[in-house]
Length: 255
Ligand SMILES: Nc1ncnc2c1ncn2[C@@H]1O[C@H](COP(=O)(O)OP(=O)(O)OP(=O)(O)O)[C@@H](O)[C@H]1O
Picture 1 (cartoon, protein in one colour):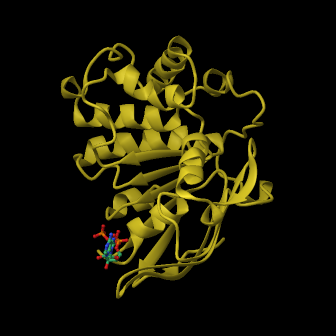
Picture 2: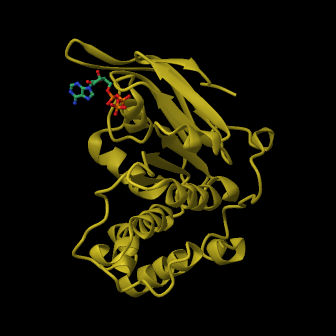
Picture 3: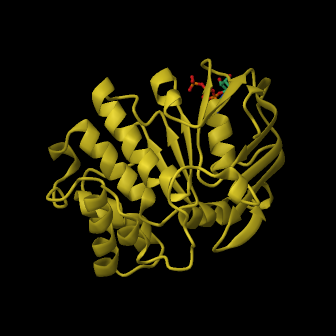
C-alpha cells in the first residue's frame, strides 16, 4: 500500500492532491501537444496530432499496429523531436517549456527530471541489484548513493517489494520485475509516467496487479500516466482512451 506521507516526505513543495482525478482543479495540462507531425521517409507516422494530458489522469493510447502510438509516446516524452508542432510541458518545479524546441541533450535532461518510463522489458540492468536499479535515475541526477538507495528502498516498499532489494533481475518474477521498473520510474517523482505495453509480457492476473500499482503510484497521487497498450482490459482501467489511426487522433484527444 502506498501512503502519501511516505512518498511526499521528500517533496514538500509539490502540493500533491491525492485521490481521484479532478481535472477541473488543475488550470493547465501537464502536457499539451499541438499539431505534431513526424515522417520517416515516405511514411507518415504522425499526421497532425493534438492531445492534452492532465494532472491526475490515466490515459490509454490505442490503435492498430503502425497507427503511430510509439511515435506519439516518444514525441510526448522528448525521446524524439517531431518534425513540426509543440509539446508544452508544465512542470510545477521547473516551469513550462516546449520540448519540441529543445536539442537532444536538453530533452534528455528534461526526461530525467520530469518523466518516468516503464516499458514491456529491457529498461532494468541485469548486473545491478533491484534497489540499485531503482536508485539509478537519482544517482544519474547527482543524488549521493546512500540517499538514493534509501529513497529507492522506500519506493520498493511502497510497491510491495520489501525484502527483494538485493536480488538481481533473474531472481525476480515478471510481475516483480515490472514493479521494480515502476519503482524506478517513480523515484524521481516525475510529472508524467509513460508506459509502453507495460503488461505485454504478463499473464492477466499479474497484469492487473501491475496496472493497479501503476495507477496508484501515478494517477492517484495527482500525476499523469500515459499507457500504450493493445489490451482492452488495460485501457478499461484508465480514465480516457485516445484512439489513433494512420497518424491521426480519431477519438479522445482533449478533455
Ligand atoms: N525508425 C523508423 N523508421 C522508419 N519507419 C518507422 C520508424 N519508426 C516507425 N516507423 C513507421 O511509422 C509508422 C508508425 O509506427 P509506430 O511504431 O509509431 O506505430 P505503433 O502504433 O506504435 O505500432 P505497433 O503497435 O506495431 O508498435 C509505421 O508505419 C512504422 O513502420
